[in-house]
Image (cartoon, rainbow, N blue to C red; front, side, top):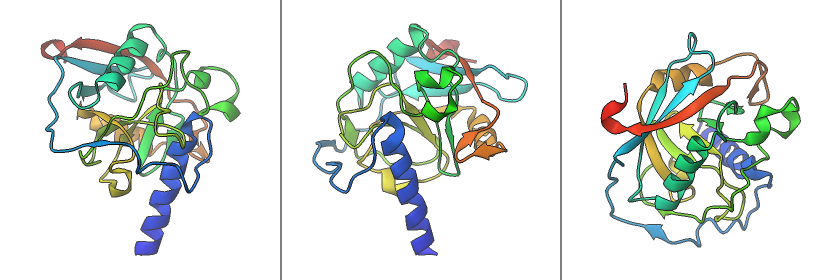
Length: 212
C-alpha cells in the first residue's frame, strides 16, 4: 500500500512540474531554495473569490491569501485576477490529489496544450515555507526550475506530505471546499482533463469582510 501511495504522489508531483510546459527531472533543484520557517500565516485583508461559469453545479470557492508568506505570488495572483487573465480558464488537471487551473491556453479550442501555458508576465521566484500541504491549501504550480511559477495554481484535496517545501503556498480555501471536491469527482475525463470543460467565470478580489 505504501508503494502505491508513494507512486501516486510522485505522479501528481510530476503533473505539477509539467504544468508550465516542462518535464520533471531528478535534479529539479527543489531542495536548493530557501524555506521560510516558523512563520505563521496571516490572512491578507483581501480574499479571492473564484466564480464558476456553471454556478448551478459549482458554487464559489473563497481563498484567503498569505501575503506575509508569499508576497510575490499573492501580488501576481491578484494582478492576474484583476486584469482578467483567469476569466474563462478551465480546471485542466483534476485528480484525487489536486484540482489545478490558471492556464490561459485552456481558453482555446486545443485541449492538447492545456497545462503548458502561462501569463505574459515574468515568472515568480520560489517562496517556499514550512507550512504543510493540508486539505484546501492553495499552491503555485511550476516547472522543474523552482523559480518558474507564473499563473497556474492548484488546491489540495487532502494532506499531501510530498508537496511540503516544494511548492509555494500562498493561500487556503476558507469557503467552498465542497465545490472543489465536486470538481475533483467529475467524469468523464481524458487523462486528468475533464472532457466537458469546467470553467472559471472570473476571480474576484474583494475585502475579506465583503466576501459572502
